[in-house]
Length: 241
Picture 1 (tube, helix red, strand yellow):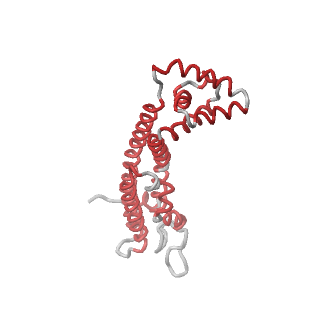
Picture 2 (cartoon, rainbow, N blue to C red):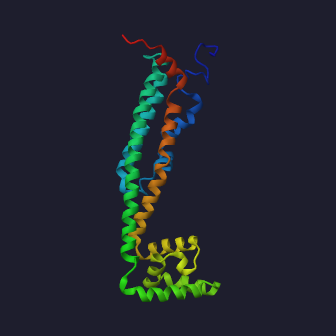
Picture 3 (cartoon, rainbow, N blue to C red):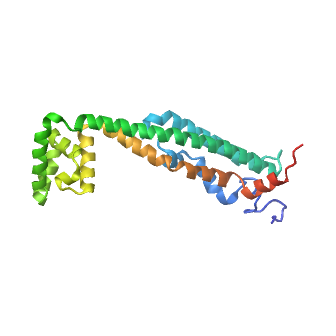
């Protein structure tokens, strides 16, 4: 389908002079916007361990996307060549995104392990306090039977290292706690008594969560840079000389 002026109409497989894939114009715009990239790939300010790598990746994504968009108006190439060139850009950027995802995934695990180690060092069990912690567990079991007692436990573990350590290092069933309550209290204990470990854990969890988005961003790159239909047709008709 062509417009009355003879140029490809909006929605045509070969695109137009502004976008090779007009239906994905919004995606192209997103890939050129740091705000969107921070949401999808990670906020450098919240992920200081990989801040420089993230900022460099953002620059690569925005620059490559700008180049891919400009191909639509490149008069030195026909439409098939434009799409083939955009496909090559997408392949290169996808490789870079996947490489960073792998690196960041490993870094996320390291951050969580380091944070856990800090928390364990401060809140982990101590042989010399075994009897005391056994007594504390018994006290917790008795107290959490009532709302008033639960409040006493909540107040105590936030200021007393031994109570916090007991909750952190003891299985939930030994204190008659639900797993969810135990998990929440353990995390709060880490935040209060091992803030550096808490920071590392948070960053690791945040980074691991963002890594899950990288393959979807790869999909956005390929779907918005070029038409699969045009590239497949061009590749099928290509003659090696």
